[in-house]
Length: 133
Image (cartoon, rainbow, N blue to C red; front, side, top):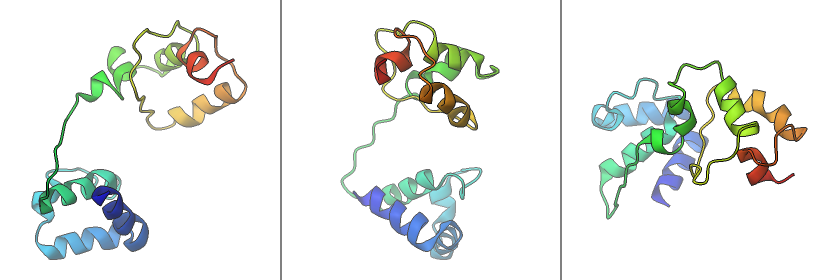
């Protein structure tokens, strides 16, 4: 709940710019930001780092993103024209053990949404399995 509260207070109440300025004023920004390239874009990570930095009885378990959220991107070498992603999600037979979460980058959500709304996917695809037909 600490992380949620930090994100809510930081990003939604204060705003990204004010939150990052307060972090800079506290003298902890270098330690918290840890080379996060675009902290205003990655506020979920910044607020998480800030909560962990303050301490507490937290346990952190890290997983390779390529084995979970970015499984399909990694499977296609990260440089596809999104055709691989769309065919995996909409056409190809769903794997028996699909990742628990799929991270869609950039315009992938916007481009995928019309297919999902119109139910343009096969029954056996991941979309068909998760959304029903």
